[in-house]
Image (cartoon, rainbow, N blue to C red; front, side, top):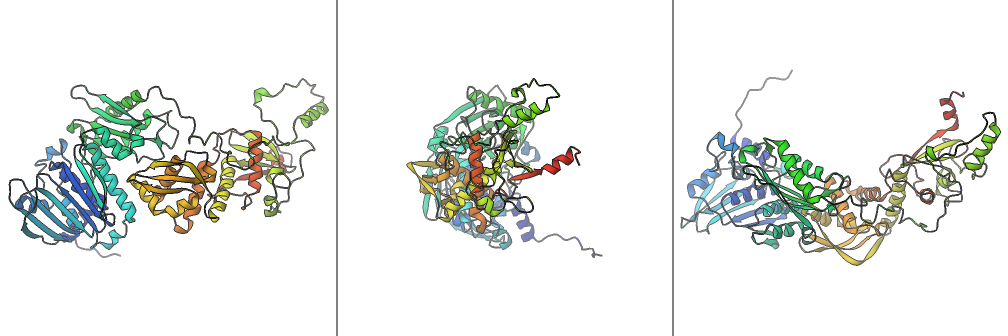
Length: 619
């Protein structure tokens, strides 16, 4: 039996580090808290400097109001703030910071220096802390404003530090954080320096559309549609920009939401936005959107998340309807895009060899609906005539089908049979094609079995094997006649730099272009007829979403599998006869023998004649 342990009050350094864990997760968390303080201080110029993605250095300088010596010393103590004074103030907040935890939390997990000077003072104060210890206070000559320097984040907490991501990933998170603030504070100049170079310098023009183009990218920004909704006295309002359905992304990273100028990640607002696009965007696609919601501070609670990234509305239904109606009004008149990928989903077999000039397989039975079956006027006793009609109209039951290919004792195709040339002795191509059911599964037969093939999994296997063959040869790439500029999110840019060898092996060829994108010069041969920029974004989305879970040894295979899945014919697609025959012949050529898709799901299953007879009680 476990002995009872006495209750103890934790030492200050321990509870400080616990509290810091709620607020400070990564370098971007530090930048967020410090930029919020700068904006609350009235700054219109904020300079952020980072090194090693912020892991070794973060410095945020502003030209705001600054603090006196006394206020600066209080600011690094817990629960000390100038922004609220009573509990009721929590329900009418007009500032970012209000908990008084940011600076002491940061100081508890880093080497921390605060330098500040108010405009009315001729000298400033410099306060240095390390690992939450007693601060060192000095008088210093400083410009008006505040500079906070954070070095060696989590150096005193190696268990926390090891969970930080790569330099590129952490840098991308910092850029994303600054992008969100710069979108809403377009009158403020934001400058970011990284490892000795300037990443961006966004001057405070005061024009929202200009700032949106700087963050989203000029190409996408020029195609956004302005919106506005609400506006009655005392009513919530929404404004901003949304994309037409033709401009879409494979993830939510280009959706920027703000409530009372506070960047948030709110599911209610995202659901309202997506509801407005219902019927205009295919599943798995998201718009580009920048939405600014203004609500009475008493009608929204921002004190529901330690990092203040989530909010709770007093009237969620009202807010949902406001956003949905405003977006729907802008989108009125747009039709559903034609396909999942521009130029691709219309013909997913376009990149298979032998696409042109293929006749319908001789053993293919036309698939007809029940209403199209011919009505036979035969006497019930004329069974011979009925059997004769079946033989004449259905090669499946006739004697013209080629003999079945070799198979193992278990009834599965042997590797030799599966690898033979399609159309001669190939296993799948030798089967009689009964038809396609539910526009998703192929039904084939021989003298003893029925075969049910998942058309998506089969096509996925074919494409995957071809991709792997190209990757083994150094990357099968098709050069683009004209290079394509692809604007990416910070996280996608980081993934492009970190995983470039694997992406290049897949067949993409690109170079960095400016501060927000890449120039694409080549694409995988299999994807030459698809939207090159959209495909690259989807590959990068897969990498961002799976970061930390992909094993380096399996990275290229995993990328090829996901890429093949994206290009393969989808369930619900009706296939022409020549497409079925082509797919079966290509399946016979696969090195694996065509048993599973790249993710391990079976391509087909069988039903023997004897099993069928048992179902009908013939045994």
